[in-house]
Every structure is written in structure tokens, then in C-alpha cells.
Amino acid sequence: MSAAETQPIRLLIVDDHEVVRMGLRTLFHHEPDIEVIGEAGTVASAITEAARLTPAVVLMDMRLPDGTGVEACREILAKDSQTRILFLTSYDDEEAMLSAVFSGAGGYLLKEIGADALVQAVKSVAAGQSILDPEMAKLVRERLHSLSGSDQSASKRALLSPQERRVLALVAEGKTNKEIAAALDLSDKTVKNYLGNIFDKLHVSRRAEAAAIFSRYSSR
Image 1: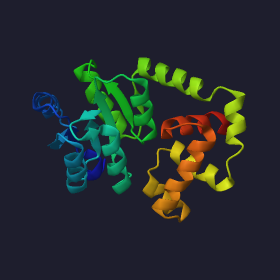
Image 2: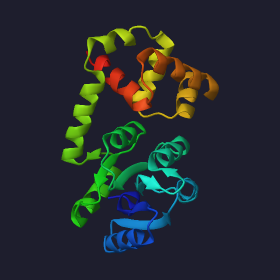
Image 3: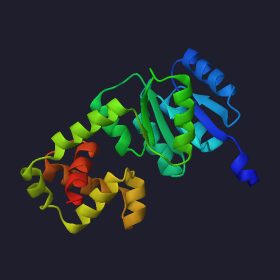
Image 4: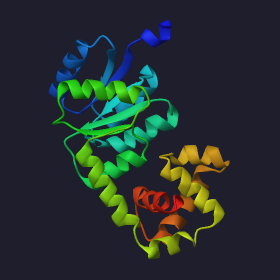
């Protein structure tokens, strides 16, 4: 086994409650395979600390004082797509889960999870696996089906131009506007304009909804 393979997983904890951060730090302190390298309590500090510390995994809360974990997730991944984001939250809203999944997160867990299961989830996400609580996974599948299960949605998708479809395909992969712009050699403003047109044509208002429609029909 190489030296790189024996290095502990570098973990950044993001939660606005100090007591929660302390509890998580204590939990992972006893795990030789995981090293807590920093903490953050806001979106802004999460983005800053992730850039400064380059963690392998960010354990992210959904609700933060200055925004959402999804916003932090997108910014962190825009700067370093190799970072893995694992959401740990008490927020079980379906829209939040969809937003997390399509922002590129590697997993979404509720805070009711046991200590051993959380430790294993961090290790699994660090290894490149996707983690979703079984009940949450079921809700996401049901929500995706409701968003994209009509022939009307398929016909709307047919109205998209080839370039709009390319943009939407990257949205479905969880890419940020900056990543889409780089991949398609476009400006950020042009990508934003394309997304506006896509949302109008599909009659949706969220990236997750548009991506759900694409994911449903691209596999047909």
C-alpha cells in the first residue's frame, strides 16, 4: 500500500451550531482514517476554508446563516471539482434534496443517522461513492418521476436547441455555470441566458426541475 493510500481523509465540517461541530469533531477524532482539518459556520467561511484547506470531503449542513449549503457546494466544486460534499442535515424537504443532488453533492443524510453509519458514509463518499438515505432516495425518485413523467414534458424538451440540450445535459451532471461555460467555451453570461431560455421552454423555475426532465428523457 502506498503512502498516499494510508493518508487519512481530510474532512472539513460545516455547521452553524458550535455544539454540533464539537460533537462531530469528537466523533471523528477517534477515527484514524479521518482527520478533521477545519470547521466553518457560514457559506462564506465554508468556501474560504475549502479553498484554503483543500479537504477531501466537506460535511455540509443545509441551513446556514448567510445562505444554503447548496450555494456553498456549488462554489466549492466550481473551484475544485475533486472535493466531495456530503450533506448532513435535519432538513428533509424534497426540493432541498434535489438541489443538493444536482449541485454535485456526493450524498445527503439526515442527522438522525448513527455515529458508525456516518463515519462509513464519509469514507464511502471519499472513495467516490454516492450516499443517500434509503427513505430520502425513495422520495427523490418519486419527485423526479412527478417532475418528468408526462409526454407534455417530453414535447417541451424537443423544443430545445442543440446547444440548449448540451447546457441542460451539464446541468443534469451537477455542473455549475462556470463549469458549463468552460466546457462549452461560452461566457458565464451566455450560459445564464441559455438557462433562462431553457427554464422558459420547460416552464420550470429551478435547475433541479430542468435536470430532472432531461434525466428522464435522455435515457429513453
